[in-house]
Image (cartoon, rainbow, N blue to C red):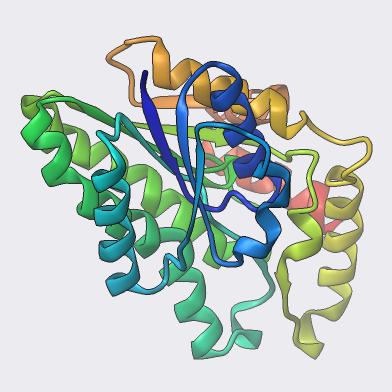
Length: 268
């Protein structure tokens, strides 16, 4: 029986991944900052809940050791993340550091904690949740692009050093998932950008309506399961028709034309 370690499982995609892998017969180690949000997992056998704040390196090291002590880990899924929208002028240094710590350094540090375990086993797989924001760009998302493009490039670079030891690393890039992710975003603004920001937020809000827009978390979790089990020597996966169509459009018309087209859509 295989075991998956997952970060950010209190809601949305992480929660859906816990339930899917459990239903497929896997052992699941579900981590989250507030374990009080794990009540839906109480009746699930083979699901172990551990408290983890991925912005705390010492906590990552400790929790990884606890997970490995429970049993061999086969897959580590770096899912924990949150969005940030706003002009750079409006972002404080603390907000900047929190975004990088959570969305980029957290995944890197969790991976670093499990590499020795996978190397000794001569197998194992890391799956990092990137985003359509790591494939194309949007106004006022520059910081989120920085971490998601960074996570995508870092994952691809890690493939070279992990593959000789039988370790895989993959990314799954969703588009606008039908979750509360949008309502949990860090949104900042500054007066000179208000008109542009208002227009942008109207477009984004319509796209990210959790009741109507995008694939469900369960549908994206199926792509994660595919990446975990297909045995393919493949690094990048896209998930959801919106993500695929936006990536294909950028490739079709080129980066420069894509930038102009997206500015017209989102800024008017």
